[in-house]
Length: 115
Figure 1: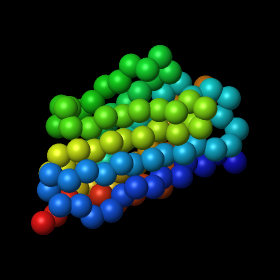
Figure 2: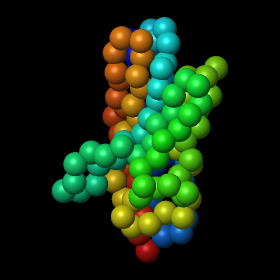
Figure 3: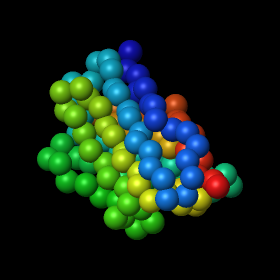
């Protein structure tokens, strides 16, 4: 019933930009927080950015100042604007939604930063 549809990944050169989108649909009464995680080859999944219902945001130190998370409450959609991309940003990016009772995950979208 609940689905998270991710889009916006792709191949980009170092220094370039991408914007990821995560649209949540289904029976989610309340979204308390949305976030983005990523998993690089051979690495554990790590938190990239989160945004809570009040609008407060948190970022991993590695992306602070380069990435911006935002949220459209009416559309139940989260965005991750990624600027000044680096090769080390290459990973599968996963959307995460914390509802009133359950946590949901997107299926991931590949971001590759390479020259």
